[in-house]
Image 1 (cartoon, rainbow, N blue to C red):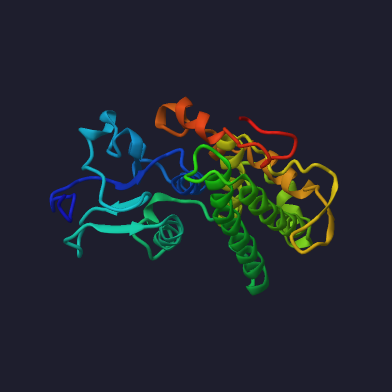
Image 2: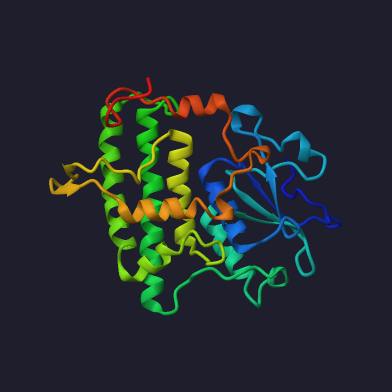
Length: 289
């Protein structure tokens, strides 16, 4: 494949190559929706799942260049005045941070009228948002071990290991729940369902995780058992996540949360069957096996 998928004469919008239903591409599409960035500025190019060809789907293959090499999502920016080669930005958070700067008054996307997200009015508020973002990323990383060891989507059958890693997920959920109940976040959580109220990048990443494990793995982690259990450090904690549940249920009502099945934002039945197959002993109350 050529190192540059565009010719100097290309007249494309910026292209986001993605597997639309998968977690990291999904957070970028949520971001684009929350920013109100239309497809005339950034077009999502649907790439089929790796098991189904790993190439641009037929409906778009005649319109756009082939997928670039590398892990998706990939933002491809055609040559323009002052730049003769295509610019590629990889990794979801790098793409989001890049677009935040490009939507600023001095950026290349200043003309699209993107709305501002919540970034914090001072250094303390910005630190609080970074706390939330870091923990939301931690959830996504920790979940990989849970699903790898505990479901048919994984590569190793190790239910005991999955169950233990799920306890670490709950540890992070407790921390996030406490943060969402704090004065720095409680007011925003209360208004999260209002689509006219902007959210933060941290909110987007957190919602993307909660939605992903619920829709794809059949586990709503915001609904704790209500029981008192020992955490990974042996401390007794009550497994309830009132703040997280309010956040999740509210964000679901936002326009950005609507999945478009025709655009590939819903995994197919064969994939979901593997994702939702849990081995015995991982989840409380039984399994899907």
